[in-house]
Amino acid sequence: MKKIEAIIRPEKLSEIKAALATAGFIGLTIYDVKGRGRQKGIVLSYRTSEYRVDLLPKTKIELIVNDEDVEKVVDIICDLGKTGNMGDGKIFILPVEEVIRVRTHERGKDAI
Amino acid sequence: MVAAIVSIMAIPALAGEAGAIDTGDTAWVLVCAALVMLMTPAVGLFYGGMVRKKNVLAILMQSFIILALISIQWVLFGYSLAFSPDTGYGFIGGLHWIGLNGVGAAPNPDYAATIPASVFMIFQAMFAIITPALITGAFADRMKFSTMMVFSVIWSTLVYDPVAHWVWGTGGWIRDLGALDFAGGTVVHITAGISAFVAAIIIGKRLEHGIDNMAPHNVPMSIIGGILLWFGWFGFNAGSALGANGLAANAFIVTNTAAGAGALTWTIVSWMHGGKPNALGIVTGAVAGLVAITPASGFVGPVSAILIGIGAGVICYFAMHIRTKKTQIDDSLDVMACHGVGGIWGAIATGIFASAAVNSAGVDGLIYGNAGLVLIQLKAIAAVLVYSIVMTVIILKVLDATMGLRVKDEHEVEGLDVSQHGEKAYV
Image (tube, rainbow over the protein chains, first blue to last red):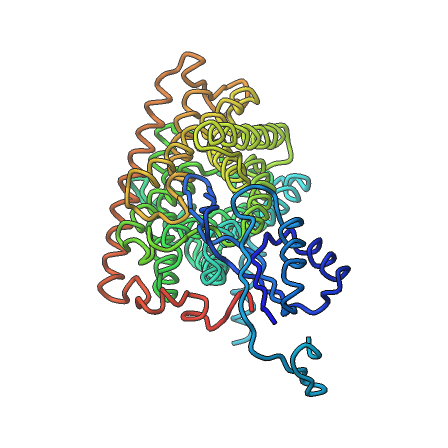
């Protein structure tokens, strides 16, 4: 089992979320986050003062999948999340030791 | 006892029985007083959008308390000091009209022959109220509320009231000099702008100036403030005709025209100079145009108004650019660049563009062959600048030594809304 943490552009969320659901990945958790990477930041200008904003708003998706499903999810996120510009985000894949469903106490694959 | 109180209270009403009151003029000036009243909370909104979200209630509160304080100060003694008969030397009025004693339904032909003196008084009250409110932008985010209250009343009494008397009061020395200020470019905007600048220097910059992101927290709020200012300014300038007549219509038209020219010019200049045309900029440009047309609105025509608005857009933009880029002076919301510099430009422009054809009570300016008017305007500007600087320094130094000007450092960082007022704007 793997945990997929994907940082994406906020405006790409609905498309990716819908595609994941169609592919059978219903359960996920979404966070509004701020961060920086190669996109650097933007300069806002108010009258004669400029302010550099180097933490940009992004959306983070977290979901737990079986090992064999990892590439499917990665493909969906990359295909739909890509604009080709800096700031499209990153995907992290982490090992997961155990998953337990609170309602039934099921463990492992059955709990995903 | 009761009878005595009743008779005192009745004095203003009894004072005026005679006089040729024009109901149209009276209605117009009353409505204009209400329009100008709206401008003070509008200043609060204009400024409120520009501060960080931890200080928005504090600055809205400052405008509002000034509205309350000067409403009282004006009827108690402010109006008397500014407009009652001169006590000699053209410096200040007397105490003849304290508590509005004798200010009633009868017109005072020295100021306005066709409306009750009481109507002129309440119209003027709104000008006295907005002027100290303009200053609050200079010391935003760090001024102690109690000191700000005391400052506003003392400043209004020692700076606004005398200068209003000089320029508008019967026997006032600038009025007798022949300087023109139709609706308060000098009395309101120059006094407020320069005093704000002095205050910003004396109180010192915000702790987080140049460190934290000081970006405006709510630009739409500033835009709402700007819209209400533009709207209220029709009362400010067209009301200053003190009658529902052609002069009021002229003031209305040139006010609208100059606001448009200022907004357009600021947008274009900042677009060419800095990058993008932005919303806070266009509103600021409109305010700059409105400030500049204020002293001229009863003396110039529409084409002159366009030139005055364009001048305001360019001059105020670069004044603000220099303040932010070349100095460390934290006139936080640029009261000097907008009102001080815009007011000075407007006063000079009045000397340049004034036309006796627009207003027979006025005189011709530079472009109609009377260069002397510009000199008179410059004299008036210089006197008001020097007086405002000296008095504001004295008032603030005394208050600094007695009450203290700034909140504690930790309160400033926490934000004035919570530390001074125990409230949060947004939960």
